Length: 360
Image 1 (cartoon, rainbow, N blue to C red):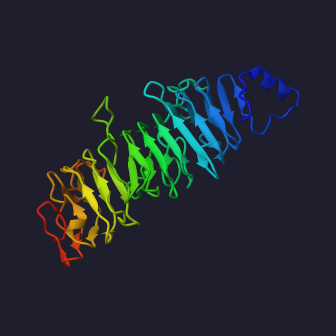
Image 2 (image 1 turned 180 degrees about the vertical axis):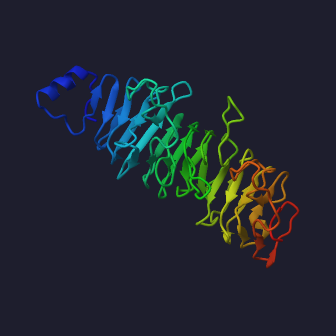
């Protein structure tokens, strides 16, 4: 954006005179800035305006800086997503008192009645699509709120994708999609992120699936998987869903989340030779049907596997970190729900007392 106009009368006058706006200048109506063109040069969005994405193929090809307190809304059909391209970077660093909000065109609570229908429509999950880093590194999302996204096939709202490195800290993800029982992607999807991506101090509630990660990502115990003001409001599939196409390959991966379980869906998931997974006390791993964990270097690769409160159990086991498969009390765990843990060094299936409902 070359300049930032705040004079809607001037915009109307130019239009009446038959003049066209510069390709890089947004249309401004009142305090609503309508974004119809890609970001091709360094640009800043400000908190005194509401930004409405109204370009179906909207790409950020340069640095977009978003000021604290700014509200960005996505048109459901004309501008449902934002994708980084080339050297595109989003620097969206809000504050605790002035969060940056990414939300639905129908959301009157944030930024007012942008669609002008008063209370006729209300926002809902899947009102808009997603923000994708698309392999571009360096984006930062701090003190951002993401509401009502997940419209398209993978159902995520923010995707740290294609090997991107990004920072997502002190953000709130609420009322978003994330895949249902047949899928694997969270409202925040880091399943194809670079392992250096940081996901800390975020809040997830009223999403279908909250969070998906790649296997080599470190996860501490700082994220929250319920509404802090209403702790009974959680997520439909309340867990961290681990992308297991890639095995654990890093020298030391550390998982510390204790509110919800890590969920594994792989019948041949390896901690390869030279790699290790360190579990904090009270960490639980749940396995989907036919899931198996394979240890190339044996039990030593699974550090603190016998720690206090550590369990390896069935996806149906609601007694360990709650209802991760999203069916309430409709299913119960049984022996043989998953395959078990294979020690490739000793050539045996392990039978530790904290391995529950496996075939062995």
